[in-house]
Image 1 (tube, rainbow, N blue to C red):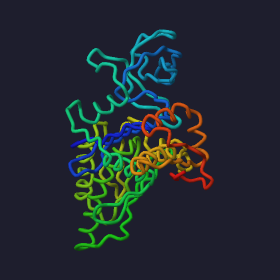
Image 2 (cartoon, rainbow, N blue to C red):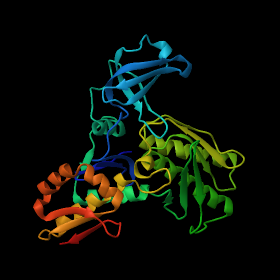
Image 3 (cartoon, rainbow, N blue to C red):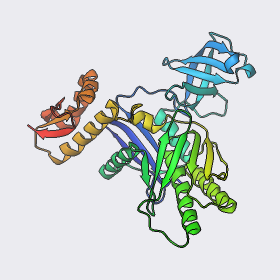
Image 4 (cartoon, rainbow, N blue to C red):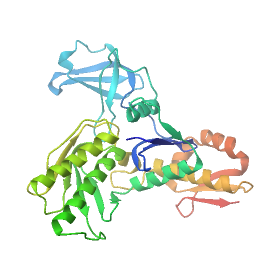
Length: 348
């Protein structure tokens, strides 16, 4: 269950993380200043029909902001090309896919910003504690750093490796570094239960969807396989309201999971298709580092040094960024390209 939300709204953009009662992240909202916002799950928008495609099972729309949208089950509507309508986003655009929407209903919520739609989605509309401190900002940075990797450590040792592909998300359990307890079957069962619970949380916080396959540790009986499935489903229902189903592990130890898409996967927002850090992510890091350093070195004149790609991105909106930097720190901060192609804050 969601216990509180860590919040950051500053030079780099907006970051919010929903956490459970022990502080583990369960869902994240990440919106760098450089990002052009698209349709977000739970948001309403106005759109116009651009094409009727019964062979593809829907209509192609264009939102008032110019984003391409897809409305499925078009045969049940009477919309025609050129007609305007009001729709609600059910799944954001992701690599190779446009955003999916449905027709607005009378009982849908009012028009919301992306951040408000995220809050409503993760809390179910209930009040939740929002923590907005310098420590919260640091925690958000650490969470984003962790999400830039494909691995996560299990609480009792070992790790999960989460590998998204074009067709599915493959998940492997690595038991290296974990101390064995009891007999082999008991140890395997303990590892599988822990991995299933951690995978549920990782899928939610990373906004993964579609087909997911977990390669469980052997040996695995049918009864224990059902327990692993139950652990995954129970954990996931506590951290996400997306539709999910899972089969008990097969005789080969593979547990198949199907999850409805919602937001764009976080790895697509942080990394390029080769797994390298995107310039937007690097600029976010640089601006956050500047905020931390400028707050500590209050009398120094400083220069934020950025790698070339991040600096080029900064230059596109330099006047806007510098206005915000000067509003926070006066005229004592400049932003330049790093001669070493890395993020640094130097004293001038």
